[in-house]
Image (cartoon, each protein chain N blue to C red):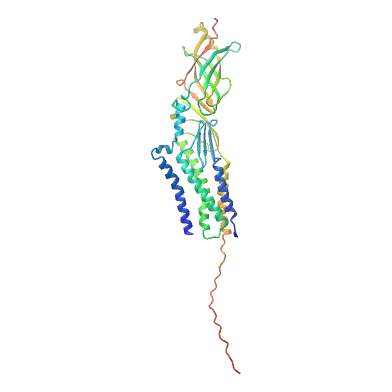
Length: 204
Length: 187
């Protein structure tokens, strides 16, 4: 039934779905302030915050998480369907739709973090680490007459690297498509039908 | 093929638009709530002394028992009770400050927390602060407080480390009043 399968695409689709399930529980990037006094658990599909023991989400970010979740589910399913039928007429649109989403999600997530840290540094002179630990003094407008120094620890979690693997496999699936989607040569022969000539009857 | 592309495009638009529009519509009476969830206000109320569920907010520690003075080492210790009104367990890792005579604002010595103290959420813990007098302080006690068994002092310029957050207060900020035994008293 499935003469050719794009195994890279299949692996990419499955890894994307697995990555989504994992990301609901394990954040891609985590920031801890002090000893868990404040935490930020961020991923494109589930971002939540903790502040002095109270966990909460920001409704707008939650809606964006739902958008990313549904988009990536669709992307993973499209990659899996495509992988088993890479030569059908609908396969190329499925591949084009599916392979980019994990990569774009990963890029937007990293760019979003970078932009956030740059803005905090420029506007509030607050150094937010992307990876590792640092101590920071809170900006004066928030702590007039009081100096508050906080220990910040941040890092990308293993679910982030799983997302990178999923994105890599999807791109590999796109590259491998050229090998599996070879068109069978079709030869059309048009020949004029020959009309049999009647055998001449010869009389001796 | 074109139908598949069209279908995927329509699904993408629906996936993007429906959750965001739905969330905006559900907050149309309070658009600020899209960015600031109610939990933040509740936590702020708890911390700032509002009408949160956890009580009247942060309270300064209260002194308990009599201050102890050890003549051999020249140190004293004072115990305070502190109620953790945060909804999470905290550890007071360190506390340091200078001690001044409340009446003359004379620097007498310094004080620090004897041991880190962990206090569970909603529980009350005891902090023991130990201090040592300077040589000048002994002269001050003898000259200006010779007849007093206890002296009113204030803990100023103190710095506290609560679960990794270090708070340093200026002299104009909070001053913790307490009574300490007078080493020069011979009653």
